[in-house]
Every structure is written in structure tokens, then in C-alpha cells.
Image (cartoon, each protein chain N blue to C red):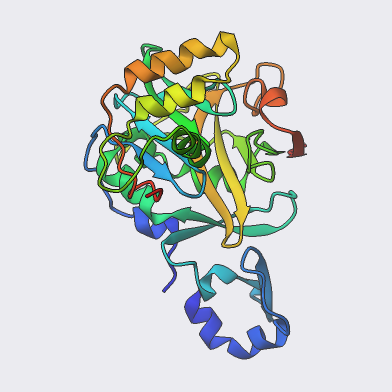
Length: 183
Length: 129
């Protein structure tokens, strides 16, 4: 991405007359025969101490950048639990292709937070053992928009809602509202 | 340099499991696991989520939220929380949080208090000192 930005610097300038929003993905150029070229603005800089990934914006439209604190990743790497570390693939999968997005985490100071829920493609046991996801379980990822961007707070397994699969059980009590759902 | 998540994970092997709490400054929560079993979360209320083993359904961890306010409450009661102190423990946070909880939820806080007995927290690490 960095290389693209340097190589196509003119295109980037042409499209970024205003300061780009780092939480979005921008189309910076179109090339004959190669389709659209989209550049994730995280290539221009991720806040120090964070890692970046791309997913669906909380509105359900377009792509956004998400941030994960390096310190949390390092903690999981050094202290575990191992299953949580090896299942970090849940983040790009659920943020990129959720079944539902809920707004309002129903706790003080996190009324503007989001929960993404869905089914990841796999469950890792160690580096190489691939298992199906646990039955009657859904993966959830919590995100909070901050001055740095959309920061991933945490991720975990929750019981699946038997009436509305893909959503965590009791989601009506745990979140303010359903923001978006996959049709 | 692009610092993305998947690059970070490439080829990394976990270093194992140790009982060590982690404070999230972004989420203002503290998470603590006592067992490496894969866990499913149970949200008790706005301050507490407990983790149960998928295999045995026993408690294997917990997440307590709103740490800054809990510490502020402790300070209001004259509890000293300074970098050099070792008096701040996870169970004190559960005790503080349990004050205004619904009666049907209090037992979770008591259980987590017992569960985390003796786990000292470093105020500097919590960025509270």
C-alpha cells in the first residue's frame, strides 16, 4: 500500500484536496484494464502503538480502518490464553463480513461503541489445527470510535441467539440498537 | 511502514499461558484468565462479564469494566492507590463494584472476588498512579 501511494502520489494528491479520513478507504486511481485501485489510508500512518485492519464501516456501507492496540496483542502472545491469540483471525473476518452490527454498548462512556457479530470461517487450535467454530456460538468484536479511529476493544465467543442466528443471545438487553444487519 | 494486524501474526507461536491481568486503556476494563480453556462469555451486567470453559462450563476468567470509576470510588473512601503500593487487588475492585449491583448479580461479584483473591494490580500499569 505504501508503494502504491508513493508511486501514484499525484493521483493521491488529486483526490485528497482535503485531509483524508484515516478511517475510510479511498479510491485513488483507475487504470485501464486493471479496474479500480483502492488504497487503504492506513498506509499513510497508523497511530503509534496500534495495528490496523480493514472492515465494514459501522453504518454498513463502505470500508473503514480499525485499530488494535499492540500492547494487547503482545499480552496475548506472551500470556495467552492461547486460543484467544490463535483466533485473532476473527477480527478481520467479523469486522469485514459481520451478520449484524449493534450500536451502544450499554455501559458508561461507551454509548457510542459498536459490537460486530458473526460466524468466522474457522476456529484455530494452535498454529495449524483448524476446527469448525463451536456449535451454537457466535463471535463478537467490540469497537469504540475514538480520536485515533475505530479502536477494537476486545473479541470473544458468545452464545448464539437461537431465534436470530448470527446475533449474540440477549442482544436486545446488551446493546442500544441494531445498527445494521446482513439481509 | 504499514503496521497491519495480519503481518504481526505471521509465523508467531504463542508463548503459553500465565495468570496475568491485562488492563485495556481503550476499553477501561481489566481482563483476567485463570485457566487456558477456550471460553464462552456471559455478560452479567454493565460492569462484569464472566468467561466459562466451553468444555466444563466452569469459570475460567472475567472482565471487569469501568476501572477508572471504581478506582475513583476507592480514592473517595481514602484508599491509597499509588505506584509504590501493593494494596490494590483485583478482589477489592470486585468488592467496590458489588456495592450497587442487583441482588441477583451480587453472587457473581463475590465469586469473582474469591476467584481473583490475592491478585495484585500495579497502579502504574493501570495508568492510575
